[in-house]
Image (cartoon, rainbow, N blue to C red; front, side, top):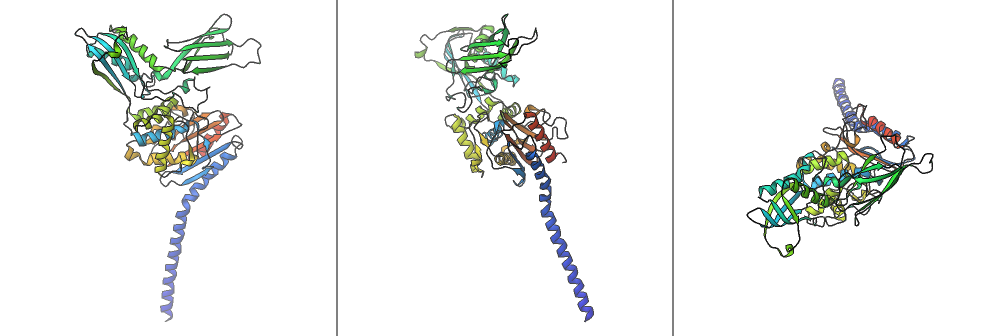
Length: 499
């Protein structure tokens, strides 16, 4: 009997030990994510308590892409001005709604009669479809549009045009720039407007030439039809310590006037002249002028005339259907260079593709509807434009991470890996210098965003087959921007450097 009891007691003891071991194993496994997250939260805490950040409004979110769980963060649900990280939302929305292979189309027609000698009596109509890359120096092959058009005229046997070159801009009837942009931004090369016909990045190079009396003359490097330039710029007087160097500019779209005023610092002899890029308010006029010049160089006669054209009826011949690069290439260029005009174009393309007026407001409504249908709390997004240049546009760190998570999760259905459209820190684009001499160089992809008192980043780690989405947003910092960027680098290294 004693042996029986002892035998069964030993058996039950063994079973109990196994049960206890199993429970410990389960608890340890459950604790592993928390233990792994603890160092990450410590990194965030050190970041927010650093001298450069402590008096600023800062938000951080680190999200596990597989589970959607926030593994570390602070102020993840606070609305923070996002600057150009708003482009993350715009680009992801476009991929979801338009598809990776979406293209813009610019179509050209010959309308009128073509006689046996090749004379067209009528007009050449260019119908803009909102392509932001037309004639862009960032897409080298896109500068060939005008030459391609002339080649199509030659292929159609047209040797002379008696009539007009008509630019149809009806596809994008809204104002070129969002109403929330500051007037100081609108004349700058980063603040150029979006049109149905965009050409040569909607920019113009202005050259400033110093005169003997220290004043400057200004002229565009190439004549821009319809643009008037008014310049009151002078060199800083010797001993003038009151007036700080700096230029201010205003662009009046209705009047086609670019006003530039200010003072430039004294420069060494031989370097007094300089140049700067500004917005071109009428890119369609530059395109028309480029077509006219190309016609002349290819011996196609052009005789502008409107006589009798309003009542003229004739054949309509499509000469050219010029597609843009696919959407993925446009978005990659937009995100790498942080191009505001591209971002506004992409946002306003969403309603255009849906058969609605191509306004900023309609684009914002479509973006909100999309992410709300995907289960996101769109109260975490206050979108005022597609680029983030509007000072009153904001998002929460968690909302940015949620969008990044869903966009990456949809890579198979979209047919494009969103993480591969963002630039690699330390190597490319607007984050080329971030993490440059660190172990994370090239191993994390980020979109940056900055303006006065704002420094933000959003992206993925690692750069290939990412595990985390991350958003770091800092507003109203009293320290130098370089100190904030330094703390961001320290945070990223603390979060991911050991991996």
